[in-house]
Amino acid sequence: MKTPTKSSYHHGDLQKALVNTARLMLEKDGIASLKLRAITRSAGVSATAAAPHFGNLTGLLSALAAQGFDELSEAMSPEHAREPRDVGLAYVRFAIANPGLFTLMFRSDAIDPDHPALATASARAFARLAALPASDQSGISPEVAMASLWAKVHGLAVLAIDGLLAPLIRHSNTPLTIDQLVEEAFR
Image (cartoon, rainbow, N blue to C red):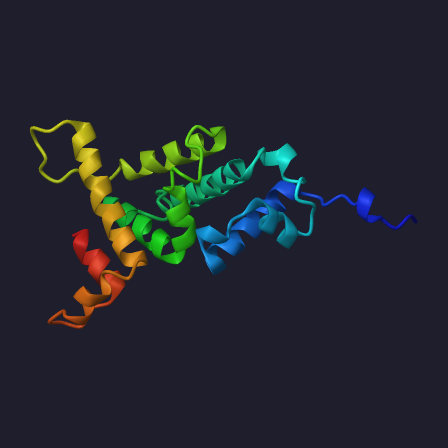
């Protein structure tokens, strides 16, 4: 049996390996750590190995963001979010559990919103979010109602992952956790 040499080595599922490596780096060291050479080096492949699969760093990060939107969509699916308010809770909880990935998903300077997989995955996630019922918002368009609801869930998510809800929790008159605060916001 011939032992693979460095020049004949085949990685297997290189796309998946590079996306997984980028995600680990993202969650460990933040968005600033995501450089194509660093990702490929960490995955154990040459710096040019990613080009046929992703083109460039933006392509790789767009694929990672698409994965994030797929996971967010799954978290907000009827199987997991049975009541409409559960959709909003799932959105915020996803952000708290995946702060780096969540942040990347909305970084237009790092991803390409027209990337086919990203466009499909984000549309699916937003369709789930659109399931949130609009509280008495008569007289406004569905688009404005949706923007208002999205602002609420996204704002809570960003405040939570940035630690900005902590002072509210600390100064609350009743004992409160971040999860309880988020749940109360969707009542």
